[in-house]
Length: 332
Image (cartoon, rainbow, N blue to C red):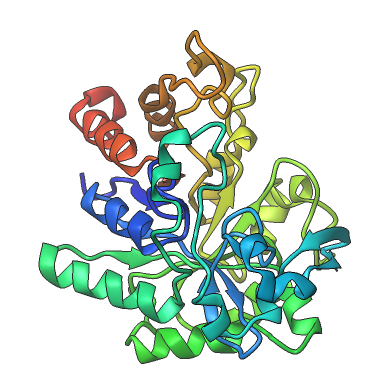
């Protein structure tokens, strides 16, 4: 189907490999993902690397490196105190001595077998992987980078936007049809990026709170028709938390329709297989780590007309999309 929703591998195939590693991204590509998602943070020497947060104790073995013990610190990130080790306090060479580990070992114990096998990848390495896979597979593999904590990094002299745009330009990706989306939970940096690049921008939204830069009062206000009209002035789409579309109680909102009316694409997050994450209607018996009916949850959202989705399990998303495409009820 020409307008089939895209499958975005959330931190790679992070349900089956430690997140934000080349292991995870490679598996996601093999499973049919259209885009791989690196969350970007900078090193002390200004290199963009993929970590979900700049605090890395939960996703690397940094705590086991006595040479870095003195770098443990407490910082205020987006208004909240955070204690640990931070990428901006390490050079790239130092970060490359660390190894990645599974962030959710209680829910994904099988992934711990890959602990210690992968480095923290740079944006350059991720772009190279996507381009190599595109050549070898004959299909276009895109990247969907998120600028993490952009106001914070700008405040410490490590702004993300110029570095990201420069790397995309080097890759030949400065077109509206480039295989790239840039996403952010903040607003001001997306507005800035609008004047720096032609690649499409995505405004992320959470079911609670608001942008850390204070540019809008809340994500709820941004999800109204009036708010979406403001977003459409700088972004090509929205990435809402999926409960903003289908609530835990099972009520469907108008967000998809309202966003489409504003000319915005809709890419909800995050679709995960474990009961702990699934909406109540799609859980199965067993504990929080037990896998439920993720394919059914994804199929429901596809039926609502979403234009893409983030999943930790790309192969389930790809399979659910194929089934939906074959079903007349889901054709649009």
